[in-house]
Image (tube, rainbow, N blue to C red; front, side, top):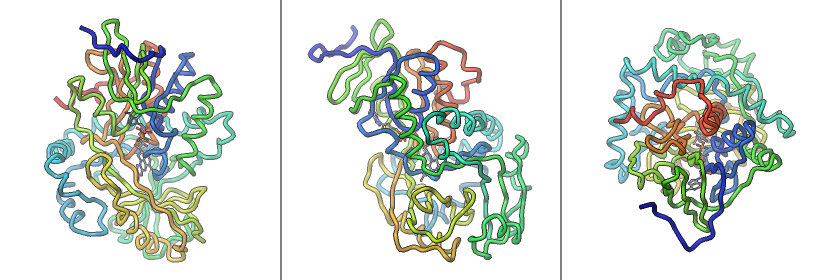
Length: 423
Ligand SMILES: Cc1cc2nc3c(=O)[nH]c(=O)nc-3n(C[C@H](O)[C@H](O)[C@H](O)COP(=O)(O)OP(=O)(O)OC[C@H]3O[C@@H](n4cnc5c(N)ncnc54)[C@H](O)[C@@H]3O)c2cc1C
């Protein structure tokens, strides 16, 4: 028997997007391009979660998964170093263990090529699609062309023969290794202790990721889209293929649903019988509001594993991976670490005025999202789990999700993003 709440007035909508992060917003824009009326629901204003405070790397060429062969050798060192790039809240370890095992399995060499291709397919079109989405918003300047500059203190480590660089090279990534002088020409404020760099060319960077989300939200509203405030509590499939959606303050009848609630998405699928290995992999940022220095590109500091980028609000350092229960309180000591590390990168950095932030990446063990119809419920499209690269992959994800809602072929093999990979 179909379950249904009788008491509340039900609002009927053709397509409901759950979550107004960057993935939900890009999906909504692509739905509107196809003439499909769109409603978004979120308890928060648009682009306030991970999509607000990320490092803004629009990483066209990203195709190297987080789990790589041999990564396990570095993990103990990272965990034991108080300034290290990864932390586990030990109370969370028992529930995290299956994810860790799946993460290590995903890093086997034979899995890497297929994962790399699937990552690249979502990341490649990012700049072109953001520029199209931002057209007419007056915020087109928020996406800039950029190199992605990986800086090394030890020049021997800037090794294009290493696996991570070969993976990129085999897929046509424009790479260049540069030495001390050329690095100083490119980024005059970086310390001379960084003696080599590898440039990934043809990338983009967002100078205010949250503002991109807000600009898209305004465009969606101008084009007739509707934003509802509320947290979806339950999705109840109906016999006619539609969904009864129970939110905090209202009840909706949706013909189609796109689930784009970032790390919260898995919770909504559990009552439907799906248990997904989705972790809230939290990261932090620190903004130096009056930095007195500037970077011309996104800079990946390879020894500390964080990204530094000059943005509209100051110089932002973002990164680290902390594993804790979803919505556990932030530990801002993880962000304070950036003060020392950023000063080492940029000796003239003014560290007086800072602001810190925490966000939760929706991370599957194999660095790929869940994208496609939910098995058995074709009218529910999954669009979540982009981990470290959701800002980059959002526009292409949105395009595919919108095509599925419209009943069009997505023009991409969705097998790598299906839930079958977890069986
Ligand atoms: C420190 C850090 C640096 C990063 N740097 C980069 C980078 O440089 N480049 C890059 O590509 N990516 C980067 N990322 C990753 C990127 O930010 C995320 O992958 C991306 O923002 C995820 O977007 P999303 O829309 O899926 O999720 P979110 O932005 O988390 O949005 C999900 C939305 O769903 C809403 N929601 C939750 N539950 C419900 C519910 N029950 N009902 C309704 N709504 C709900 C939430 O309120 C939220 O607004 C970084 C992340 C972090 C943390």
